[in-house]
Image 1: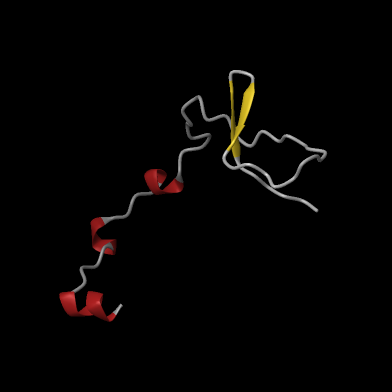
Image 2: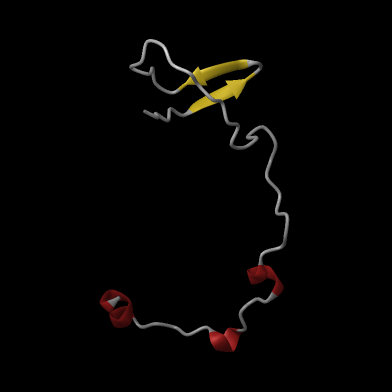
Length: 68
C-alpha cells in the first residue's frame, strides 16, 4: 500500500505535514522542486513575444458578459 504525505526538507531535516498512521514501513524520498531559489523562466512565454494587437481585442457589453 502506498501513501503520500507532503513535507518539507530544510537544513538536513524532513518535516511531514501530518503524521502517518503506520508504525513501521519502507520509505522513498523524492525531492520535487527547490523552493529556496526564485524561479526564472527557462523560455520567454509566447504571449510576450507576440502580444495581441488592439484591433484583435473586442469589447463585450455588460449583457454579453452576464450571458457567459
